[in-house]
Length: 156
Image (cartoon, rainbow, N blue to C red):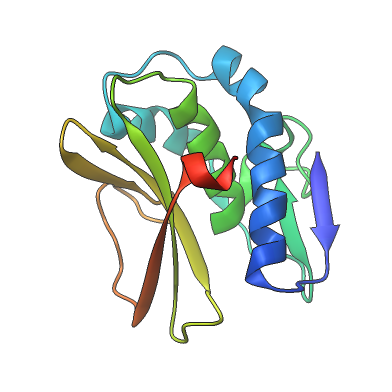
């Protein structure tokens, strides 16, 4: 499903991201093979993704099946950081890594207005940032304000 709307605020956007993650999980179970760890998942999913800015004045949130199969832009895998976060979280949740904790980070120059979002997993005591706007896993660009949200809490 594609959610295309005017940006209201971060809470509204997070609510819609949650819905897109839930919708994405069944497709993620079929699409994403079993991965050894979050870095392995990054390298398996990254080749499918191409960064594309949202249309002007619009918040575009694509579920994983939409991102890959029926893309808004007509080019498979085209989306921005929130689309990639939806994809990453859905794929991580279906991996069933023992004890893994999936999270999302919101970042920006101002506390009340995030400009970037990415996901990650804490697994076996190590944090694995998964930001598909980067070329490799494990990279977190510096921002003045960063907020980490547990996906488990976001989905309840």
